[in-house]
Image (cartoon, rainbow, N blue to C red; front, top):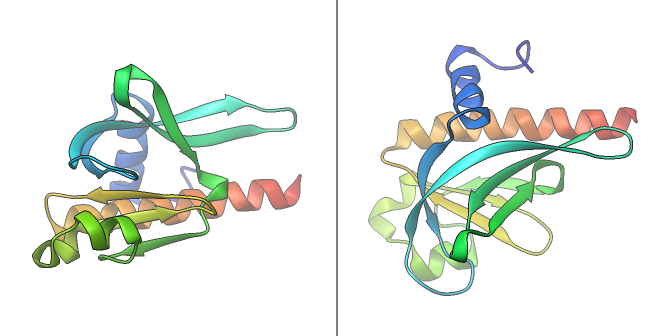
Length: 135
């Protein structure tokens, strides 16, 4: 992973694997957008480690998205969730990790923050897919 990521992206990766990073998450079902601390978690599988982007949900349950299951990563108000809960004026701050059955919709302080996450998540999803393909 170190060889894959540039300096800023690797710093984000390190923060996600240690202390976590606070980002506003838009709700999948109902409710208001709220700040969540996101972390990358590695889960032991039969053949390799699975990488998940996790956060604490309601009643402190841990929720997550397996990076290998991400079909696409989109910017802007590109998902049903963000079309419902997002503001047009903030379109340049939204990032969505889209899987077969849901989307994880995030809002950043600025476009630079969103772009850093987009580059980092894109690289990590590509790494996960390459590991799976090689197994």
